[in-house]
Amino acid sequence: MLNPIKIIILIILIVSISIFGSLAYGKEKNAGIKPWKELDADPQYSAGQSLEFYNLKIENGSRATLVVLDLNDRHFELLPFFCENTTCPSEIAKKEKTLVAINGGFFNLNNGESTSYVVINGQNQCEPKHNKALTENPALKPYLETIFNRSELRILENKEGKRQAIITPHNAPLPNGWTLVHSLQAGPMLVPTINDTEEAFVRKIDSGKIVEEAGILSSVIEQINKENPAQLPILLKLSPDSDNRLIEEVMAMGQKFSLAGYVCSNTSLTRSGLKTKNAQDMKVGGLSGPPLKSLALALCRRIYELKEDKQIVIGCGGITNGQDAYDFIRAGASTLQLYTALVYEGPGIVRKVCEELSALLKKDGLTVSRAVGADCLSGSKI
Ligand SMILES: Cc1cc2nc3c(=O)[nH]c(=O)nc-3n(C[C@H](O)[C@H](O)[C@H](O)COP(=O)(O)O)c2cc1C
Image 1: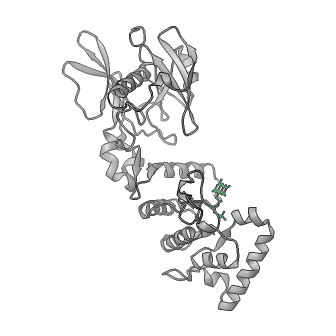
Image 2 (image 1 turned 45 degrees about the vertical axis):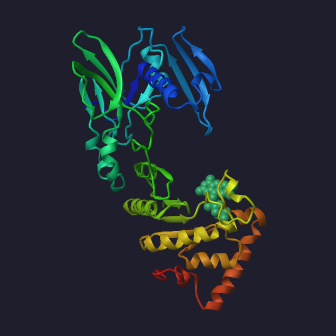
Image 3 (image 1 turned 180 degrees about the vertical axis):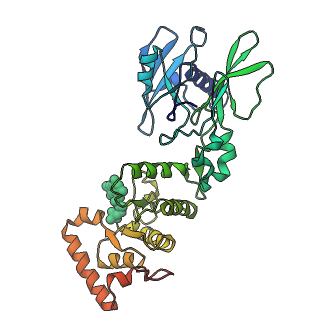
C-alpha cells in the first residue's frame, strides 16, 4: 500500500494523446470548433520543435496551458508515479528533470481514497469500489456503474516489447497480444469525444441544470469541520433556483453534518420577477432585491418544513420593509438578512424595518418567536 495521500503525476504522453485526439475529432465531427492553432494563444515556451506550451484564456475566465507534443519524435517516455504529498506539477517536473508533469487521478485529500483506477507497472494501486465517499453516497448510487467505468489512458506492451497508448473505458478488454503496463483515469474530456456528463463528472437534475458531484459538498464540509475546532456554527446558503431533488440531497447532507441552519436565499439566475423589457436577455449576474422575494420566500417555507427543529432559517431576499420581514418570519425565518436594501437606503433601513415589523406583530397579537413558521403547513415550531 502506498502513502495515504497519493497524487498521480503523468509525464508527457497523456498530453499529446489528448491533443491528437482533439485534432482528429475536430476534423470529423466538430467543423464549427476552431482548431487549437487558431486560438488566442502565444507559444510561451518550447523545447525544440517537438514540444510547445501555449497559455490559453478560457471563456469562463480561467486559464489553461496547452502542451503540444510531436509524436513523431520517439524520444519521449511516459512515466506515471505517485507523489507522497500535495505538490504542484511544475515542482515535480523540476525535481524529476522531466519536460512536463501533469496531474491525474482523483483523490480525497482527507483519507487518500481514490475515485480513479490506477495501474502502475501492472499493479492495481487503487480500488474506487472501496471508496465509501462514492459507495455510501445515496445521490451517487445511480451513477456508480458509470463512474467505475470511466475512460482511462492505458499504456500497453506486446511480446516484442513494443508499446502503444490507447484511451478506452475501464471495463473494455485488452486487445489480443497486449498486456497492461500502466493505466490512469483522468478528468472529464480525456478526449473531447467523451463529455463530462456521459462519465458522471457532472449530472443533470430535473430542471436540466448541471450540478457537480454531490460528494463535493460533503468533502467541503468535512474540511471546514477540520479547520473548526471551536465548532462554530456552520450555515448553508441555498439557491432559490435549486429543484426539489437537489434540495433534498442538500438537506440530507445538512442533517448528516449537524449544520446549524440555512440561509434562504442567495440571488437567482432567473429573471422572472422583473418588469424590465427583454429581462430574459440580461444574462450576467444574480438577481437580488424585491423581484427575488417570492422565490426566496417559497424556498424559506420549503426548508422550514424539511429542516430539523434545532436548525434555524435565516430569511433573505428582497427585504425592504416591515411587511417583507414579517412575511419571511411567517415563512419560517427566525433571523433576517438584508443586502440590496442596505445598498439603496443605507443603515437607517434597519430601524425602519424593525419599527414596521413591531407594529405588524402587535396588530396580530404575536411575538417574533410565535410568528416563526406561522404560514407553513407545520406551523410555528418554536
Ligand atoms: C453585489 C452582490 C454581491 C453578493 N455577494 C455575495 C457573496 O459573496 N456571498 C453570498 O453568500 N451572497 C452574496 N450576495 C447575495 C446576498 O447576500 C443576498 O443573499 C441576496 O442579494 C438576496 O438578498 P437581498 O435581496 O437583500 O439583496 C451578493 C449580492 C449582491 C447584490
